[in-house]
Amino acid sequence: MLSLHDVHLTFNAGSSAEVRALRGVTLEIPAGQFVTVVGSNGAGKSSLMKIVAGEERPTRGRVQIAGRDVTRLPVHRRARDVARVFDDPRAGTLPELSIEDNLALALCRGRRRRLRFASGRARRELMRERLTPLGLGLDARLHDLAGLLSAGQRQSLTMVMAGLRDPRLLLLDEHLAALDPGTQARVLDLTIALVRRLGCATLMVTHNMEHAIEVGDRLLVMSQGQVIADVSGADKASLSPERLVETIVAAGDVASDRMLIGEAVA
Image (cartoon, rainbow, N blue to C red; front, side, top):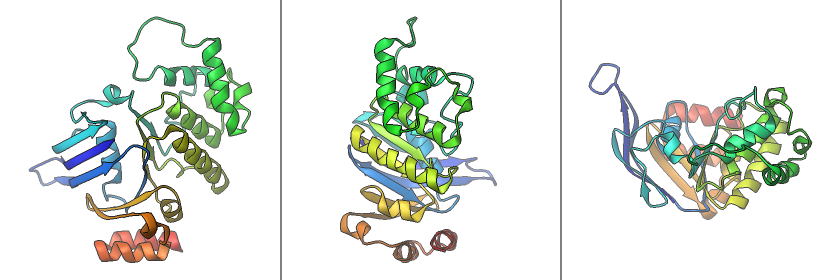
């Protein structure tokens, strides 16, 4: 479903400020696979997400989604196939619009623009159907402004919006980072349920080592723009945060990554 072949991303190439954000990343994620990604700041996680989403174009290499070469396509040209949830709950919704209007915009994502009613009876029923399982009462608040919602409510709404168009690929960019532990647990449960319903390829960047190990089918560790460890199946299931430290040290021996994991374990 998602294929990256020898992807490089370099900023300010040839200058004293050159930064090699990605260094030859080759990656295959089939439909239905849930992949978590960990690594220290500067490891290349955000660059990987931006390349896949279309925010950045590779300096070299190829990106394919569902067999289609999208390397040169910008974000809006990938919107039908790719949904993304950011770390900031405010980033995925427009606060001055109602819950209904935000959902209506999500339903139009990736479609050709034309004059028509943004919402109607059938669409409202779909919205309520998707909001009701959240247990937050948002299905009865369609006319409330999104800006009135709490961080957890807005991120839950963003998750529903991400799944409305049944994307082929779901990108979760540290989407739990700004939430308190209780809300994190609720949104993580929502995430698992959404991924199961969609059956799409999913890439989730996280700084939480327990989430990285416990959630999903496969775990990638990034360092200095490369994937230094790729763990799945029984090997992933048997990992502990401490064992993950050993895996990272054995694969890359990167001090910043050891520091990150050590803090997470503590």
